Image (cartoon, rainbow, N blue to C red):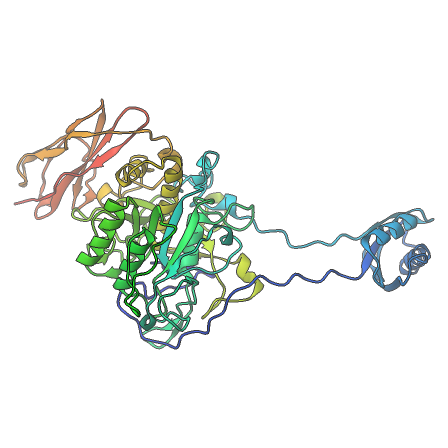
Length: 570
């Protein structure tokens, strides 16, 4: 669920449960680390003369030649003037670094030589993008998840996050955190490895031809999502929200998309349930590493099926595993996008660098309200304030192959901007991993209440459309207690134009402060922030309710409730 990003972003398709046009499966290629370059068999002496003289090259060559006479097969293979007074003299013949240092020391003592030293060998500096990630770091943007503020307490060690997606590729920012998973892509869905289900969840690529016959490159979607959750913190490349959590790749999407049956199997197996191999009819061995968080950055245009709901209920209600689902990218209400419209899931909408809802993001309604928002990008180039840089997308790990995974050395240091609710969901999964590490005994309901009750307020989006705000790890870590409802908030009055409605705050387990925001079709009504609201002609035939925000003592999670909406009569 992402859109194409400028320059380096890739396009993903086939995340719907329906199949796409078939194509030949790409040849399996296993990425490997590049062979180290051979050490040079030459040594260079940098000679800086007191003055250039008439022939600095000849002068430098003469003093180096004299100093190197005692070294076996050493010979001068190159003399190159660098500046007016500095000359690089290269020795070949297997001269060691120690021998070169001895030569340089002797040259340094010669007449007309200002200094002499062995030339150092420089390599490209690692690209460290960790501190500049607006979506991860608290200092980079007030609308990021501020994960770095809690890393002094935990980085998610010991928590396993299942990524139900396209699989995973090798990457230096991920390899240390990837554990054994499973490939659930059935043979008909373009698995790319020549078979159906197996124990290797490697992403073989989801390249395909679209309806117009154009080739669509592989997305490496699962690798990008995984990087946002748990890319390692190594002062190089990017970093994930929970950089010490484990990623369990659960491959369900191939070049032809993925079948709902395989997604259901992946969810069930991931949390420790029993599933049956479609080819043999035999049950798979139980997952020895059941996950504590599940991320589903996928979906299709449909209502939640009974079978999918049963799998989610098993994960959440029986196994106590939160299921995080992307809301979709059609810019519509998410009631027609499964599995985000299933009950008991955490529905994630996409927010931007400026704290607004992304234009492409699906959004909640009164019947399927959003749970939380998270950084997903804007869908277009967005400068990062006065600091420059790109904040229109989410930067994460990627492969460079167009069809199958690339074996090019750059595969280990490849990154790309993508945007979409697919990118938003893993931020929430990462924060849940951090919370799970801090509070292993918390239930799914408590984890959900903690992220909702500590969210950063969004710009112009209601709790129905986007949830209470943007997930914020630093604020979530301050939650130590939860308000209990004695009597739920409600609305009294007649839903008819000209009548006045009154919001009732309900009754709570602790002393609370309450604020109100009236909603029309789930959208905030301008200046309607009192407990009473008089219905106007603009409300006729619209659905009206109120967003009640309840704030308890310090350490308590806020609670946001929206009573049942009613259609206003004329």
